[in-house]
Length: 185
Ligand code: B12
Image (cartoon, rainbow, N blue to C red; front, side, top):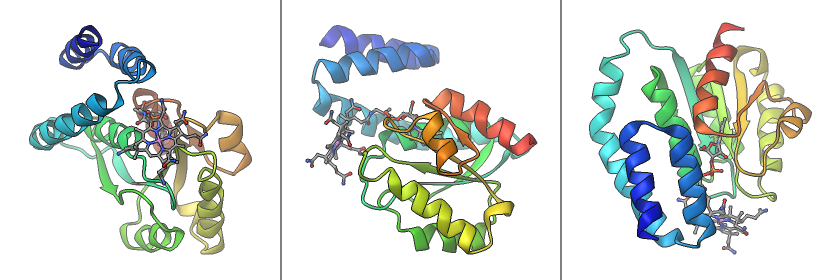
């Protein structure tokens, strides 16, 4: 167990995204979930300090992203990683947190006018809320003003296309590539 945590630690220090992912998955598979959760919290407190420096090195904003985990879903580790990666690449992030009602997404879209809306869901029961959210954005007449990307463990490219999202990524590093291509499309 300590071995895998050391590998995660080293991969984080080296900025080795693939290494972090593989070893975190190994850690989860070997059921050290509580330690992981503590590590994730610790990482977030460190990132709070790093944020200003990351932002400083990217003077020009890459674009504005409103992100949140959909209604009924409390998982946020993956969403937070996506936020951090986007922020590190110069995106301005407005994170609405977890269990975000459709109305809240719509309200913030009107207020913030982001380039991208990013939705996260980790449960098969809540991933349908992504479609409900996209439908509400369309009904409010906002759909052509914002690109929508979706992700989370049960979400696939096929599902993303089916519910009318513009982009999907299976992980945080590729989420940056997808976000950039959506901005430029
Ligand atoms: C940690 C965890 C929890 C924690 C969450 C803590 C937190 N702050 O997030 C707690 C303990 C609260 C929890 C609760 C529950 N959980 Co849970 N949980 C997990 C667990 C172990 C890890 C999830 C995780 O953080 N993975 C690591 C991150 C980095 O990966 P990720 O989230 O997939 O994110 C990556 C990508 O998906 C992608 N991504 C994610 N979001 C987005 C968004 C965009 C826009 C993009 C582009 C990409 C993207 O990028 C991320 C980084 O690479 C998974 C099992 C697993 N191994 O996945 C179960 C799991 C998701 N949970 C599950 C369940 C059932 C529950 C509960 C219902 C349990 C219960 N009976 O109470 C509750 C639900 C609570 C709720 N209403 O949400 C099931 C879901 C089954 C299903 N098919 O729906 C899983 C799969 C476990 C299982 N095998 O049964 N859980």
